[in-house]
Image (cartoon, rainbow, N blue to C red; front, side, top):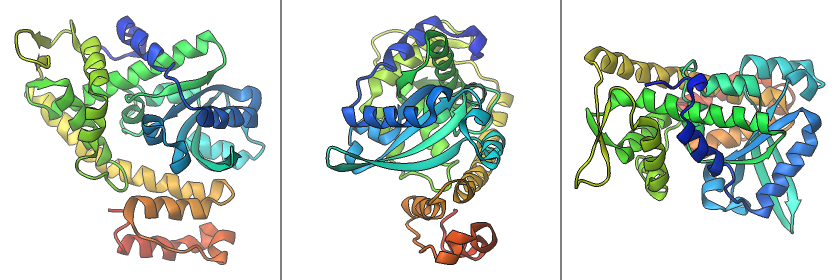
Length: 322
C-alpha cells in the first residue's frame, strides 16, 4: 500500500480537507485566535483535536491544540526552548484565559511544519503523531492555500501510516471498525498510562461512518487488498499480508510500547524545564493518567532538574509510569 505523501490519495485528501472545516465553538475559536496572536507571523496553522473537540465540552476540559510554525528561532527568544523543541518535539505549554465569565484552558503543542510532516509519515516509528492525527480534527487557522495542502497531505499520510502499521495485528479478513479499534487500542498501549479497555471501541463507535469512509477511500483498489462485496454489511476486506510482515509488524508494536513510554516520560520531564508552571503541569498530567498524586514543593519548583529525581522515584514506586 502506498502511503507516501508524494502519492497522496486524491479522494481521501478531499475528505480530510472537508473535515478540517468542521464547525467549532466560539470558545475554542477564541483560544485559537489568542494563540495565533501570541506567536504572530510565525504561525502557519493551528489544529484543534482531541476529546474536547469530539465532545464540544471546552469549558469542562482542556483543549488539545497544535500550533504549527515556520521555524523555532522566530518563535522563541530563549534558545533553550528552541533547541528543546527541535530535539524532542513538540514543546507543550499550558495556558488559560477568561472567556464569557469562565476559565478556558488549553494544553497546546508547538512544532514546525517540516517536523509535523515527517512525524505523521511512515518515516516515524512512534505512534504519538500519526495515531492522533489519523483521527478527526479541525484546522482553525491556516496561513495560505499552499500550507493547507501540506497539512492535508500530512493528515492523509497519518491515516496511511496508521493503517499500514495496524494491518499486521489483524486477521486476514477485517472491517473498518475492527481495524480502527485494534489500532487505537494498540496506540494507547504506547502511552505512559493506557486508556481504559473500552476507550478505543467507544471512540470508533461514535464516529464509525467516518472511519469506514476513510478506510474505503484508502484501501479500495489498492494492490493486496480485496474489498468483499455482497450482502454482508459493513464492507469487509481481505488482505494479502505475508507471515514475515505479520511477525515483524507485531514485534514493532512491542518495541513501540517501550519506546513510547520512554519518550512520553522525557516529554513531560522536559515540560518541567521549558515553561512557567511546568512542574505543576507535569504532576497534574501524571495524576490525571495514573491517579498518583504528588504535591510540588517550593524547592522542586525552583530547581526541578536538581531535585526531581526523588519525586520521579516515588512516582515510579507508586506505579505512575507502568
